Image (cartoon, rainbow, N blue to C red; front, top):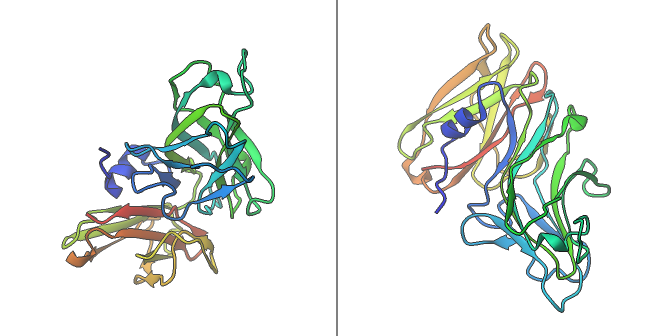
Length: 282
């Protein structure tokens, strides 16, 4: 069984110089909140589903034709970051049915793809080249070509005619600490006191924090698309210190336990969004 990490643990794992703009471990289901599954032809089969241990899983099935389906992420923003990367954990079975296998028996393709125009066009940024059944991998994929862009989405695309099986987990898009404000929350426990901190903001400038309990958006705002669904509540505006850090503490209602908090901030001076966070309130 998976353990849901607190926001504090996620921040520590990411490292003080990183800024996660998307993080998904599929422990809440497939598709998770904010993600959608798109069918690219008439034979989706069972599509992307949970595998029972907290991963996203897709395969085709004999007799239903070619499966071509994409698990599409929420919109995320790479404005103000540099050196963006994609990391994830994967596993492949029936690898010989991949089209690029040296002894290929099929037409299978497993891709990580990026769109910046809502899915009208796609760029392939990673392709599965597994050679053996049960191959596992945790690649780091360079997404720096999309630095500075907003309206970005990740597509996890499966294609095959009675071909491979593919498992995906722990998907993270990281901004690489390219100067954008980084947002963390600690102490997110019902009945407790949470600390909300933004680093890398404009020294002496205002920092706005918003949150939602209703979903991951996307919602368009004057700062761009945010990963929160309406209604979005606004916290008191903070002032960053000389080091660019703004922080506040706030009580967490006991009745909030079990809900998922979707929260994101903005540097009011530069108009730059922080990374977004989505975690269970313990």
